[in-house]
Length: 41
Image 1 (spheres, rainbow, N blue to C red):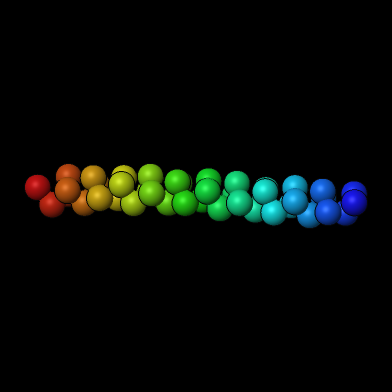
Image 2 (image 1 turned 135 degrees about the vertical axis):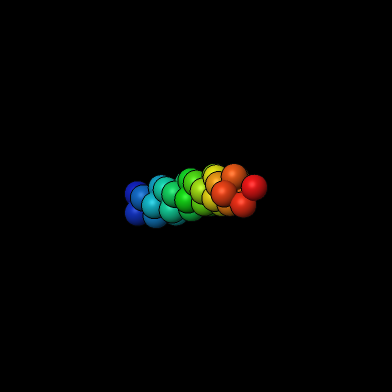
């Protein structure tokens, strides 16, 4: 039973990390788009 809880914690941390990476990627893409607009104008 203890092992199952540990596996769930591991999966949850992976899910959390993936969500953080996705949101950071969106922020980077947004910043890059704004930079491109500034440089292009």
